[in-house]
Image (cartoon, rainbow, N blue to C red; front, side, top):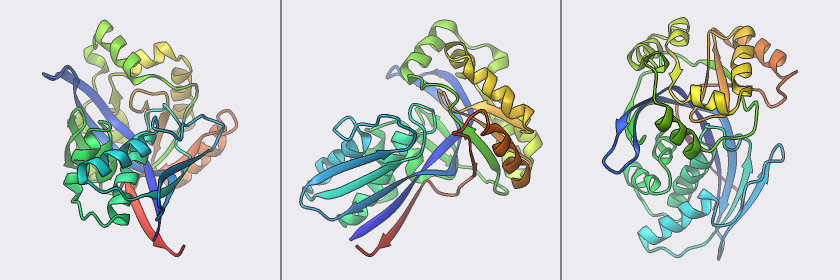
Length: 297
């Protein structure tokens, strides 16, 4: 069997930190969205478990146990007692250390794909529970679409999206460490004016009101990340000047995105922004995080 899998990126319409959990992690409240930008993975039957990685743009991505794909595969084998092999090839298009969930989405794709290849029959809930042991964003990447994510990101509630929305996104500078960003946030605190309006953003998404959505976007990590990487500030301004109704940083950075009224405005902005930011890509919202297709070997 040969499986071709799209592992889709995510953006955060909103990201708020509402407290601390008993385990010491931050208690989050976010609106997370799958988008059509994706890494491409193939999985086929093999005697041994192997991973080959090809990257776009020269970023280094390990192909050993430090890669979440192999970590996910090994956790799945341990949890199920299966010792089957698989040859996994990963083509990276989602920027690395960008806050777009690339590693988490790859891990999610491995869990979903291997569950099918090895005929394990695990439910989505079971895969999400395994995924949470690998990374906080993995359950969302398995479920995908538009979700209100709470806790560390594992408590997911589907949110209606009235219509597809069009975005540009790119990484204007080198990546950021999520740990470093959260440590700085803890030291500096959160100003009330930096908090997003989750409820207003959720209503705007349900109505398809892009202008109201643009006013509601927010990310409490953004001020910290902007100080660490001033290029983020300039990139957000550039997106707004290109016609976005709202622009923000996603996750802990360093990627930024902007949302547009319609596809034509988005396409025009992408062409303009790509002159300064060659990695700028146009994308739209997606209803799922992982897409699997069975193909001939």
